[in-house]
Amino acid sequence: MNNKKLIAFDMYDTWVHMTKYPNPYKNFFSQLWLQDSVIRELSFMLQTTDKNIEDILPKNIQSQKNISFLIDELVSNIYNQLSSLLLYDDFLSTIEILKQKWYKTAVVSNLSKPYNYPLIHLVPRNTFDYTILSYVVGIQKPDRKIFDYLQVVSWHTSDEIVMIGDSLKSDVQWAKNTGIEPIHIQRNQSLIKKDVDYIQISRLSELLDIFSRVK
Image (cartoon, rainbow, N blue to C red; front, side):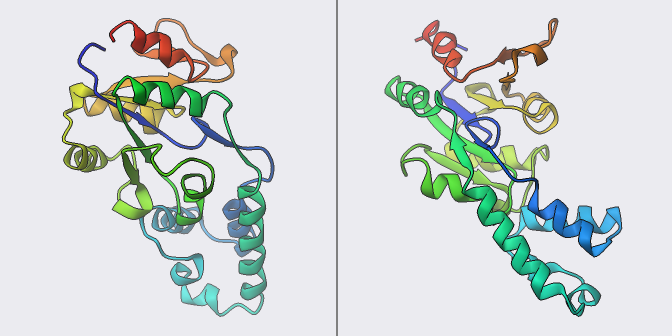
C-alpha cells in the first residue's frame, strides 16, 4: 500500500444502501413479459446511456395500452426506493480523514441515471475528486476500458490505485484484471472468507488502520 495515491469506491452497498423497496426495473420488466435477452439488453442500455426507459423500449412495447401507467408506476417506485437511501454511518468520517492524509478519491460505479441520487443529495460536492459512472462514460465494470478512463482523468497508474467494493465480479475481479489492488467490503462478517488473495473488510472505517500503516 506504500505507493497508493487514489482510493476508488463503488457506490451501492459500499458507502450507501437502500433500506426498502425491491428493484423497480425488475418489477417493471416482469409485467412486460420480455425475454431474458431483451431484459439484459435494456438493462445494459440503461446503465450505459442517459436515456429514459421510454426512449429505449421496443416499439411493440411502447404501443401497449397500459405502458404509460406502467412507466408512471416505475418512476414512482424508483422515487420511493431512492427516498430510502442511507449512507453507511462510517463513510463520511472515513473519507474525510483519508482526504486529510492527501489521498485522492474516486467513485466508479455501474448505475442508471436516476441512481446518481446519492452524489447529488447525500454527500458534499467535494467528496470525490473523480466521478466515473457507467451511464455517463458508456462503459460498465468489469470492462477494463472503464479503468482506462479512470487512469486518463486521474493521471494515476494501476499500481497507485485501490478499488473498494462489494462485488466480487465488478469490483474485486475487475480491479485484479487491471492491476489495481482490490479491497472487498462484506458488511456481514459471516460472509468474509479465509484464504483469499485480497484484503477483506466489514466496515469502511477499517481503511483508516490499513492506510495508517503506510502514512
